[in-house]
Image 1 (tube, rainbow, N blue to C red):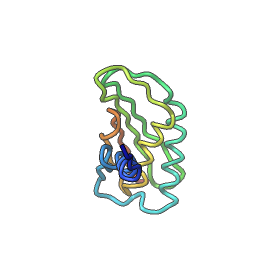
Image 2: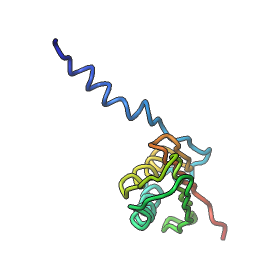
Image 3: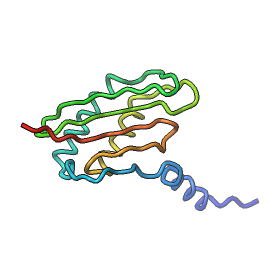
Image 4: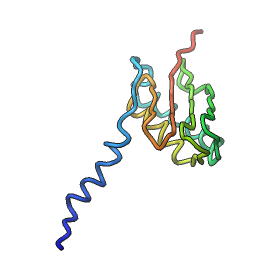
Length: 128
């Protein structure tokens, strides 16, 4: 039996894109420039470092509105265990899910495509 590694490797490399897809984006552009995305990513790092690793029961959600140094915006972060049973979220998993939204969606968005975890990031404009 001759094993052909290239098609298998191509399939394995494509699986994350096929199975997990891209986040759904909101129609806005408040995080369109690099400085804004960098501040959002920094807020995500801080939140995920405090949040994870932790074990969550099904449908458990946590959310927080964080001020960022890129005026005039705040970032609302939300995470939900959409699994049928208890699940543990790691720091890397938390960061990857939320940063994928920031990198893909200039106005925030949500992603319900990864291992039962549901993440959401919304940029809010603060009026002064």
